[in-house]
Image (cartoon, rainbow, N blue to C red):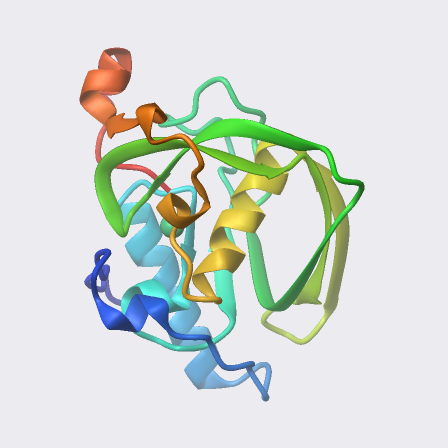
Length: 181
Ligand code: NI
């Protein structure tokens, strides 16, 4: 178990389409997930995708467990391992909300996302996951799964006047450790 280096925007490895996982329950997959959890916790993130540590597989983890110190106003999201995900919008309603990313450290931007989505995929044992979620949970899963398409949140933004440094935008959060999701 290791805290891995998180790739930052501009690294071509963040722009690749990730490959599906073909075997579940393997020691290799467990080791990857252990590294991802350690890395996410060390960075105080709300989510992490395997491509962010240079592993080009369709694996994301997310969840705040309890209330996130970086997103204190949001409802907690259960800790989730999501492999080979498929996301479908439920209706066409969108909402704008602030996002950060461990691969874009120190910044936040307002990003439009579908308000409600259904996501399907598998956990690390190959058990099916099928959930309909909304709000912050829906936002986080859309953000993480975008990493598997080589997309970072600034590419989803429409209004760059709503983009800036976290400590300037949210001075009240400056005391919280580390950055972003
Ligand atoms: Ni991210």
